[in-house]
Image 1 (cartoon, rainbow, N blue to C red):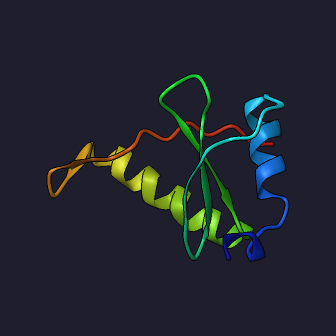
Image 2: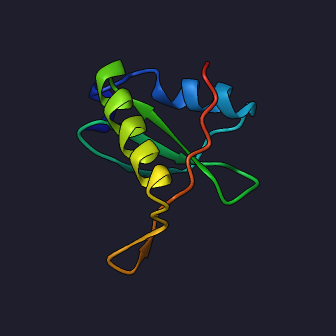
Length: 84
């Protein structure tokens, strides 16, 4: 189950967004879980460890630096990073 990766992920995501309500789970995988923002078309990902976060952040930076906004016909999400 996804919560084995980070048992506090639902609470962390809710606090990060600033809402007391439960968030809709969009998906999970090897590196973490993703929740929908309740009022806008955004999402928040809670990584299971700092290393997976750093790898993903580096990938988003490379995409941005190379002005990649589509890949194989799919839109690349825009990174909105705010440290806890």
